[in-house]
Each structure stands twice: as C-alpha cells, then as structure tokens.
Length: 336
Image (cartoon, rainbow, N blue to C red; front, side, top):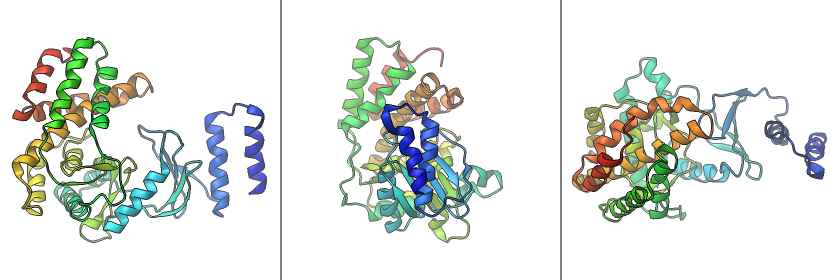
C-alpha cells in the first residue's frame, strides 16, 4: 500500500497534469488497499448521467464519487438516516470523503425495470415503494439534522435550466416572465407535510429485494441529493418517471394508497402540490436532458423528451397553474 501511495504522489507532484481516468484509477487502488482489498477484481457497472461510477467486488460495491462533482459524505449521511428510519438502503462499510470513495453493501442486481421484464407485478413493486415512502414521511416530520431545504432559490435555479439549455432562443422578456410565474407559483403553493425528499425515486433507482419482507423489499439508491421539502415530491418522481410510461389511472391508484395512510392530509392541497412540483420537475428535466445532449455528448436522453412533455401538459391543467399554462401555450418551442 505504501508503494502505491508513492506512485500516486509521484504522478501528482511538480504540478504535472495527470489524465482524469488515470488519477481515479490510482486513487481507487489506494482506497481498496487501505481496506485490505487490493486483490479484488473490479467489475464496472453501467454509468448514468452523473460522474459517479460503481464497481462490483466479490462482496460489496465500490462507489467512485469524484469531488467536487459528487458528494460521498451526503450519500453516507442520508443512507444512515434512511437506514435508521427502517428503509432498505446500502450499508456503508468504509469511506474516503476527501477523494470520494465509499465501500457499500451490494443490494443485488434486480432493478425495478429488470424485475418488471422478468414478470414481477408492477402493482406489487409500486405499492411497496408507496408504503416505504409513507413510512419515511410518517417518521421524518422534523428536520432534525438540518437538511438543506428545497427553497425558492433552488426551485428557480432548476426551472431556469429550461431557458439555459432546452430553449436558449427565448427572449429576455420571456425568460423574465417565466421566472416570475414560477416564483409566484412557489409562493402560492399549499401547505402540506414536509419530509426528507430522496428526489430521484424512479424505476432505475429502485431495487427489488424479494428475500426481505413488506416495504423493505424496496431498495433505494441514488439519494445523495436529498433535501427537505413537501411529501408530494417523491410521489411525483415515482409516478411521473421520466424514463418509463406511467398511466394516469395507475398513478391515481398509487396516490390513493398513500392517502389511506395519511387521512389528515387535504387531498385537494396534496394534488395542487403534486401538480406544481411535477411541472417544476418536468421543466428541470427538460433542461437537464438537453444539457446532457449538448454539453456532455449524451444524446440518448432526448428519447424521453415526448414523455416528459406529456407529464408537464397534464400537470399544467391544474387550475393553480393556469398562468404558467398560458406561458407555455405562447412560448413552447414549436418543433417539440
């Protein structure tokens, strides 16, 4: 291990420029050597939109979460919070937050998409996810660890990705009005219960764990961006999945299941919140997917654009979003 550290140091000394992949490879080896795993074979898993990468070892996963792009400390913090609340998340065995590495529990290789393809009931999968989210929301009604909030600043930053990347041809006047309308919608949103939001509860970030019981059969990953916000948000993430078609009737069935566990929540206020955050999320994703295509040379995300527009159009039908609906009727890019 000492020799390996010296190799890394020699690469980095004297201001030499080291290729990114070569540097990460050396740092991975240092971390594994520190944990007595230098002989392990690393099997790379498919990557996604972020710079985070996973490697399968014999009895664990190595998460390569390079700073400053990713935040391994946030992953561990939220993983421990979720584990303490009773949800199924990867246990963290070891960490190096300076260089961005985690050794975590391997929850298996059965994401929801694959489970559905192999015949597992969609209703069973989604019901257990709803049950898990309801359990989380019932137990995290107080922001005891001072999680960052999904506040107005973050809300507007995310919707403005639309004008920056999806439709940069918008005039300054249109962009200003766009921002004003979203700010107005944020301030007028109904007050519903708040909780920890995982933010990306969707088909490719959920693992089916059939050996466990009840909602613990739903395994959660990719929650390091979690924040504090309205309980409607993660249901939107799940039921307006940007990468999978979810029918309106099935979405309503799942939300009704959620209501059964929260009889005190106003259904009218919940649906108003659901549509606001659904519309906001869709607009953000349109910007993100356009950025992935234009900046990061990942055009395959554009195949999902028509589905996202369908969700957005549906949410904008809510009366509380009438002004935003009118803006899109005037300014929506005609070639979508």
